[in-house]
Length: 403
Image 1 (cartoon, one colour):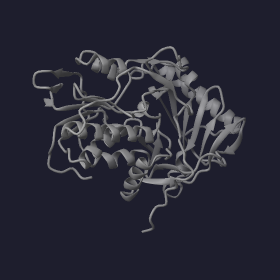
Image 2: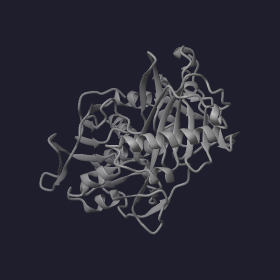
Image 3: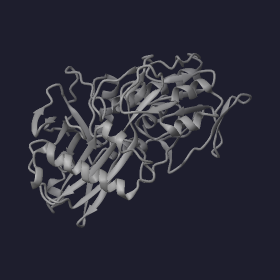
Image 4: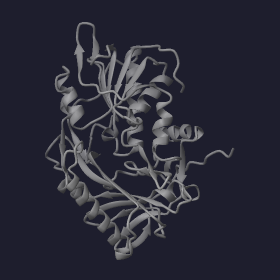
């Protein structure tokens, strides 16, 4: 899994989220080691699999501010989990995790195992990133297919034999609009909406607001994570308990992550790069009020020690490509796409898509299979919660080896 001498065809991976990182690691395993991952992350790669580290009263606290946890139902992904666990990057989240309605909590009966990063979800992306050639923070503003040399010109970074697009949303749409592969661009065109329109055969993405809030003492709630049935809030999680920070924080602070509903995200959507201060205050106040209501704490909710809101403009796919091929690969133009929207909107979906695309590239470069996948824009609706899908298989239980 370690980065070794560059061999094989050159591959540029645009996007250092889970799908892009796993694709690069898998290419390495398959003997293709001349791979470069480009990511815009200022602090780390990982995309939505990330954490924020906040100094509160002189102590550093961790918030998982996007992906909250993940599950496993595919044996290929179990291999990824086993590798991450062997590197000390993941652990089983013991919970309790469930559903919250009107202040009443019910454990999630269908959940077999939940996984999280040991020191936040960034532990996972940091581990994967350490095994690839990663360039960040880097903005790739243009990619062009050059037919004569049959290579991709990737911005100012030179020519590559293969191109992997491992992100979506407006940026991917813009990037591919003049790349010379209109069928690939068609698949990356996007619509933002809280409700899926099944007649619109484009990728459709929801927007969510996220609130990080730290209280000066424990709220003594009987759960660590809960999907919420409410107009404004879809999920709440106690980061302090989930990440076992209680003993190390020492100052009594309890950190929570709160996610809005898709409808709330759409109603309050603004340019996420430049959120007006008045909108930030409005969203913070409304999500705090909703948190007090759904937890049943009401007016007894203590004043927060810290708050911060963030808008995830392209938070979650509402539909997936219906070809079931788990990735997109155009063998005529040496380009592929990987991402959770090609399998299922979750960490497992992103990882599997990256694995499959790496295998397509290896087969194509070796001459074993020169064909590609379907490039038809045919989508189907996804199943899951506002923060993603959590596929399970009761026959698959991860049993970490005792050290």
